[in-house]
Structure formats: structure tokens, C-alpha cells
Image (cartoon, rainbow, N blue to C red; front, side, top):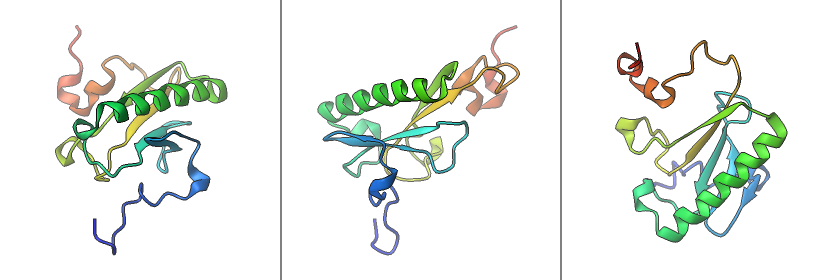
Length: 128
């Protein structure tokens, strides 16, 4: 990435970091879609989850699990969506891997069935 346009995840202020380990960090999403929307981000600037080393994936999963525990204590959501936009055609706008942990709350949608399938609304509802 060019110096005139630094990666926002490589330059996060320490004060935003909620949890970290040797491979990654946890922050709240700057543009949350629900209360507690959280991101798990590798320290290493890597664009795709498929470019992670096995140890990095394990360490990020540990952070994801710890972040979920913290969200449960603080917000008590009813469920979670976990997602990765991997590549521009999948909606990735920051070219640094980040895993979304999105708390879901009773009544936040009239019918939450289908979950992530709603990224293509015309194909989401497959049930009668």
C-alpha cells in the first residue's frame, strides 16, 4: 500500500484495541451494523484469509472466541453472524483481512432465516 494511503488496520491507534495476541487484534467496527459489531484483524498485512499461515488462523480463531465471550457478557446478544468479505467482488473494501463478528438481537430483523444468504437477496429465501 502506498504511504499516501496507509492501511487503516495497520495504523490503528492502541486505544482502539480490545484484545490481542501474537498474530492479531480485536477492535469494534467503526461503522457497526449492530451494537458490539467487532472485527478480528491479523497484525500481518494480508488481504485474504486464504493467505494466512496455519498458526495465524488458529491465533485469530482464539481471538474470535474470546471476543464472542466478551460480547456475550457486555451485550448478551441472541446469536452471531461471523463473516469475511474476501476480495473486492465479495464486498471487501479494506484490502487487509478482517473477520466480522456481528451480534444479533431478538427482533433486529422480522425473519432472520437465511443469515448471510441475504448478500444475494433474490437467492436468500429458499424455504417455502
